[in-house]
Image 1 (cartoon, rainbow, N blue to C red):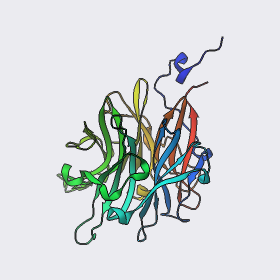
Image 2: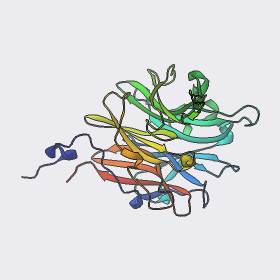
Image 3: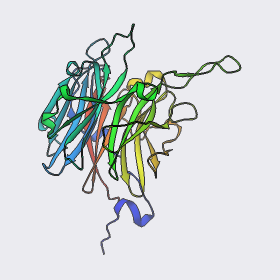
Image 4: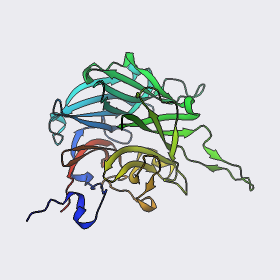
Length: 337
């Protein structure tokens, strides 16, 4: 008799998100150039059953001193394993349309009540560094269709000053029980501890993970710190949320970690689990990545997860041999052998 073993239940395996091979994924978008600092990635993907389409937001980035995060797009395809030519651009915007120095990751989601599309997008406000330091904030775009999302009608929903942070960025949005939960990358204004009794000043890291809650997805009055970097924390210098997914009976968070300041552009993907979405326990020990690229720094970051049927779809930013990053997709069946 054939027995369907979903996620290894017959072997008493529960709540395990199946790993994927980043090297075997298909390319969704190419970087705008070759070499360090050219990226295509920071994806946020969804499957829309109404249109039978996969939608994937991503940003294109140039090196520091150039355009940086200059263009963001949403592409669509019925086949997520299609090459770049099989993905159609349905929406595009530039940093100039946001009045920003740079645009980065966004979170694309459809409101379960109004059915409108929402894009939570982070941008670095266009201010000169030497006089009034620039900071990251999160804006919300709302429209009946992805194609009609309009940067001119954006509203600020999270600003660093609201929470006493130096920045708030890289949102990961989900709706649980009718409540909006948005995880962000943030940092305290003072990024140091000390001096201690010996006069030693220690860095407290430059990126933590905060959880923001809202009933309407617009008003986010509070921030709850769920993870901080540091020798006793989740990363040496930086942690950033990447995706949150339910695999019964636990929630799994994919997060990016940098152990030194040099890792800011080449973080690694890690895992943590939770039963309440607020208290998380790290799974990947000793700063060992969950998955790696075979090239350059080995970085696989900004991994997003879409569960569709019995398949887990991963969209991720992948380090190439020429030091640039490309956007890839990989699929894994949920059922284990």
